[in-house]
Every structure is written in C-alpha cells, then in structure tokens.
Image (cartoon, rainbow, N blue to C red; front, side, top):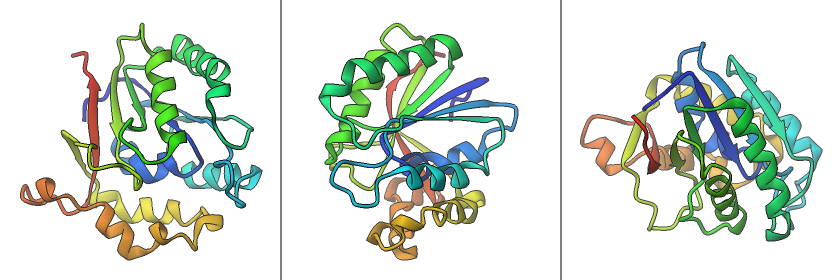
Length: 206
C-alpha cells in the first residue's frame, strides 16, 4: 500500500475502521502518524449505540502506535449533519495534511457508510492526499477493489482487537467463520494471499 508519513482514517461507527483496515494500519511503520475519526457512537436504531461503543473502539485501537483518535459524540449520521461533520473532517485535513486518506466506500448498503464517503470526498476536494476506500461487510457487488494488503502476519492481532467490541459479539459478522470468509478474496488467493484487506482507489498522487 502507498503510505506516507501521515494517514487519516475515517469510519462511520465504532468498529468500522477496525473491521475494514486495522490489519493494514498494523503493518505500517510505527513512525507513521495516524489520525482516526469516527463519525458517530453507533447507528440510529441500534440499541447498542452509545458511549460504550467509543470505549470499546479505544481499547481495540490501543494496539496502534502513533495514533490519535477523534470521536463524534452523537448517535447516527444523517444528511442533516452534513455541513457540521464535513467541517470537522475538513479541519482535520487542513491541520494534519495527510498523505493518505482511508475511508468507506460509496458502494455500500448502509446509508451512514455511504454518507461518510460523500463527507470525505467533499472535505478532501482540495487535498492532494491519495484516497482509498476500504472494504467492509456491507459492501455491494459494485465494490471492486484494486488494492490488496496481505494481513496474514497481523490477522490474529486484528481479531483480538475486534473482540474488544463486546457489545457486537452476538453479531454474525463477528464470528470466526465470517471473519475468515471476509478476509478471503479470489484474486488475492491466486497470488498466494490467504488473509487480505481490500481497497478501491479513489485518487492517487505519486
């Protein structure tokens, strides 16, 4: 993966970043600065949403060295929040000046994930950072990754971090079997990669 000195990572909810790209973050050199922005304390209508979700994410992401976490202390993300949240994201981009931005995909069945993508693209419209969208469990078939990161060497560390999300433990996508399926990809497999994280390219600056 193309990595600079500064990486800005965004998720709509606690556990999105961990699920979609924590393995890739774990493989980055410790000296790479990482700023993580989570746009809510969980989705609207989810009984588990709340401050406890942020606490779980803080514990899960404590495995990352050189990381700085920002949580928006609101439940859910809607179009009514667009201007205020875009302003927060834009401010971080202006102050941090990342080389790489990792965000969610427009090809997703969850409306709050799609909205985060739109927020990121709008906030970064003047940025020269490369932007990649990470794969997540709710992607549609239109999600077509062109970048694959071999996370086999850090896979167990990633799973251990996901286990910190105890409020989500009963969700089917947190089972060992589901996680193994999610981290497999035919294209990566024929190149000898057993566990990977997949990314769509939005823009690249080399």
